[in-house]
Length: 313
Image (tube, rainbow, N blue to C red; front, side):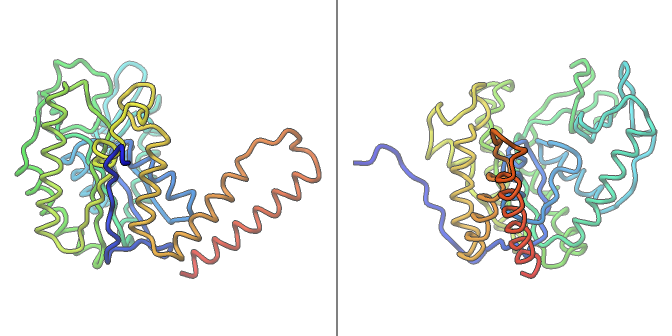
């Protein structure tokens, strides 16, 4: 007897290996998957602007990476004791203007160079709702808890996303020839917009990614949204806030992702490195014991061996 409809992801021509250089940007869901990628030994760069939810902000940020143009003081604003950028998550904010700019531009320089040599870009769209500054109409990535009266909150349409991203993909292909793009839609539920509005938002994103894939070669879609909504479809696979997928759901998606996107050798290396990482992160009762020190040395040597294999691939 079957008690759920399990989503089967076909294993196609698109494969990821440890020889890939992978840029990852998008909602907090992409950070959960990137943590898995990192633990499995992949060479990744994730969210150089911090968590970014909507397609227009992601496009603006990617274009900034391609430009490589540093931020200036005129693009930073102060609210109370903190300096912020409307393009960045609050983890880039600071109490000192020059230090804030240094943090932002240092990451920009690194990620701009990383994107240019990337063979894969993973994008996770979270919501089709955007916030625009009332004063300028510019889309912001983060409102930094400023008064709602300063912003216009609206849902962008399918064509807005497709036109913006078709232009971006064309530019990216010139900058990084041969790069592949993998789109996902975050299963995170944005209920502050409303239940019905969240469904309309997700539908817009799903239609947009479908159209982008049809119109652009070397672009792909992975059904992480469908796995949570249609396959797992139970509140026990959500965190306590009933909005974010639980760790168990993330693990399940990662398992399906590995099976569909990695060849057998890559899966084996990933499993070995994940096992080593778990062992190294284990908290022992007696960390000063000689036995534990030998264990750590053995695991570290094993990790280095697999890391060399990843580099050689």
